[in-house]
Length: 372
Image (cartoon, rainbow, N blue to C red; front, side, top):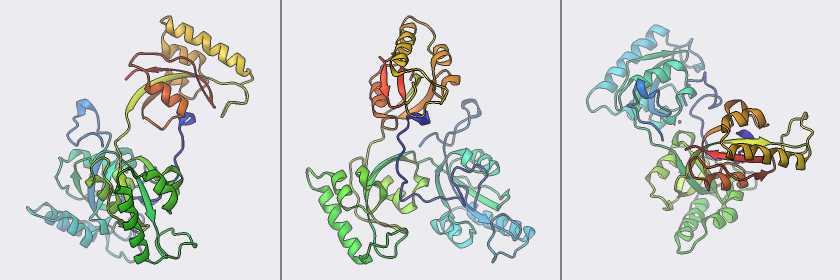
């Protein structure tokens, strides 16, 4: 599937809730890092695809990634965690305020909020403990290599889709040296742009290309689909509050001021495909020596068999040069807009069960079967 994906530029406002890479399945907090399924998923339906939680991390001097200023023993950390958990479990408790006061994790200043996240993104102890909680329930201390976590399970927000215009100022996070405007000037400019973006007939993408200081400017500010926990809290919270098509006032983050356009989530389908490559097509294995004409002929032969009723998955295992061949060509579920344009257009034009004509992309020739 990776060969078909159009790689988006680095999302400028991304903030890892974890120490280290968000994709590191062994990282857990210093912060366990962020819709989808609700918390009530039962064992019968399998584990939820997404969770949402806040936590308070109490570390000890021997816990992983503890700062040099933490001198308490493991026993002292456990006692402190028990005391904080009791406060958090009390009726009317303000979990976010307790996190800001007590947490040793980087999410502490954000009230311990981790946003949405996939269970695999956290260490097992954290994810398993979270899944056992009901929405709104606070855990007893949960031990991990990073210390003791008090976890509040929250309702999954769900994926978001947005574009933004980022106006930076001298001294804000990751601002280019060429940016000399003051914070006040940046706010004034962002306010002006927000007004222009809301005007009837305004072209948000054009404004982003003209004014945005973020790397998404060349894409009209488009950030694509993201989970709330992957963005700084101020950005995620502001986006959640917007209606589809609504444009925000300037939203401040460490990166500057954002003017945000909330967009509808793209359609999603599930499909499988067969890819026949030729010498010179993108990412073709060096062992592939067939010509482009030969590849097209091989694809036509495969398509004829598929339309005659031969099992598509079996044909994928026999004919496909793509990495999904061993899975019967299965690409799973994917949103509109992430695949190569010709592939995307053909796939999303199909009805469930329908097989496409031959589709040419830079990677070779495809036939596609939509199955959901």
